[in-house]
Image (cartoon, rainbow, N blue to C red; front, side, top):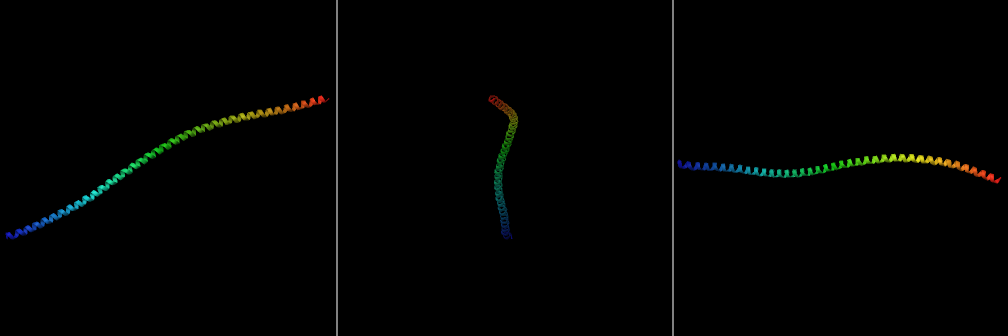
Length: 139
């Protein structure tokens, strides 16, 4: 019996070992597939991180450009306001000068009218005097 049991036990042991090898091989294959899948996900994550880093750099650059544009706009607004205030001052000074000139012109016109009236009166007297001289000379 001993000689018959040993080959059967040996065959059973071989079957068990074969089953164990198949189980371990299946687990290793599943682990390799999982590792391969995780490596793919890791690569995709690295690509996504690189893409997001580029996008963040682009956004930072855009923000810097916008900040510069805002600062430039503010400087232009301040400069424009300063220029506007300067021009308002010049306009006010010009209006005052215009009022002064208008007053001077009105005064000159009044003097001219007075002189014209005097000239007219003097001419009438001169005409009257000439008429008297002619009538005195004719007598």
